[in-house]
Each structure stands twice: as structure tokens, then as C-alpha cells.
Amino acid sequence: MDSRLLDILVCPICKGPLRLDKEHQTLDCKADHLAFPIRDGIPVMIDSEAVSLDAKATLRSGSDAPPPPYPAA
Ligand SMILES: [Zn+2]
Image 1 (tube, helix red, strand yellow):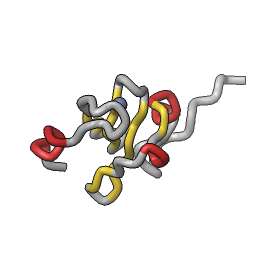
Image 2 (tube, protein in one colour; image 1 turned 90 degrees about the vertical axis):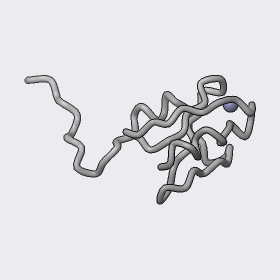
Image 3 (tube, protein in one colour; image 1 turned 180 degrees about the vertical axis):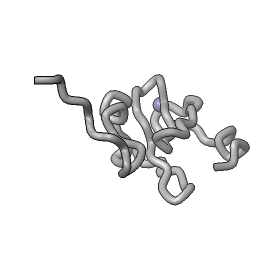
Image 4 (cartoon, protein in one colour; image 1 turned 30 degrees about the vertical axis):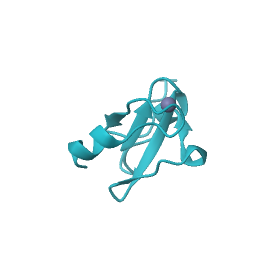
């Protein structure tokens, strides 16, 4: 997405700055510990659509992500 657009986007909750996460395609608010999704290049700045940064970390960025490694038996 356009980095200039990022400059004018702020968190809808705390009005603080957002950080673009290109891997997960989210905009992160460190203060609220929330990640807002970017769908089809459009940031979804709705608090009900946001996920916690902890939950986002468990999301896979692509459908072809490898399965989690299993310990050898
Ligand atoms: Zn915030």
C-alpha cells in the first residue's frame, strides 16, 4: 500500500501512529496492542475487526505456509 497513506492513518482508538506489517498485511497499534487488517489494499480501521498482536502472531501469512514442525518420535 501507499506509504503516504500510512502517514495519515492513525489508530481509531487512541489516535496514535500505526506501523505497517507487510508480512501479515496489518496495521499495528503498539499502544493498544491491536492489529487492524488490510483487505484488498484497504485498511479496515474498525476496532471490532482488529485482532490482538498476540493473536496475529499465530496467523499464517499465506495458505502455502509449511505445517508446524512436530517433534521426532
Ligand atoms: Zn491505538
